[in-house]
Length: 290
Image (tube, rainbow, N blue to C red; front, top):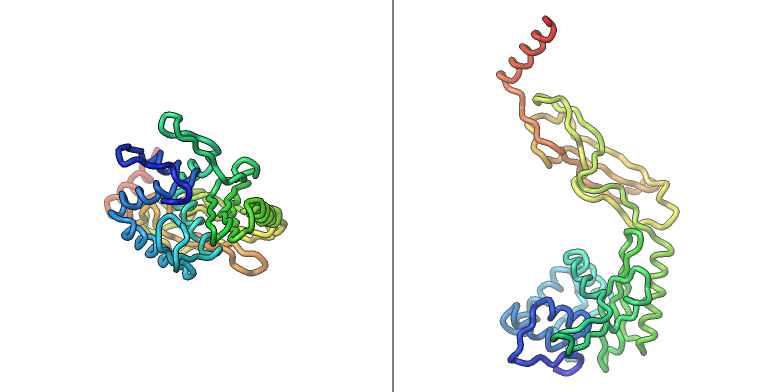
């Protein structure tokens, strides 16, 4: 293949787990091609999948010509696009960090040594990956990811003249982010916000909860000025199903709405019918007579 590889043999079998270790830790180009062929049937078909995904993510500066990243005419991308695809990977498949945080490991019963070229994994607090890369034309590149106190950041360095420069520049970017910003969590999915009155239900109120996690990135020091506004639908009537939207909660800073999250009913409530109403009336009379 050229470049980094672990010298795959056509007679051997490696698990997907082993392949991912070789790819994420050792940049094994032969494993990348083998996986591409396994997934899509051919490298060409897999590269088409890569370009389709890039288009879906809005990576307008990117055209993939191969799946391993070695120099090829027309095979191009940008630092912004690398950040976009890095975020997609970390958000949709967070288990990737089980591989990208490996410093050293082995394959083939200890015969093949794996050593991570991303020195931030060992030297930068909260580092979660993500990937180094270098060629004679692209020089030294890095997508660096790290998480501290609930805030996850990505720094992308391209065409650095040396490995030392790519790591020092990535460190500066990550430090800037952690020093100046914080992630403010307003609640987790399912957290109770308040209760709401409902009409024509077998019970009078429902617990209203967050549909999804609520939080935003803020400049440090502005957290205390966040205002929360709850807006419930008018005349909420039964039947109500669990998870049904009944309002919204918004979070604003100096009058600017920063985030809006749906509020949903935590429970289902049936509509009251004649039989249920009669039972309730009878029960009330009976309790009065006692």
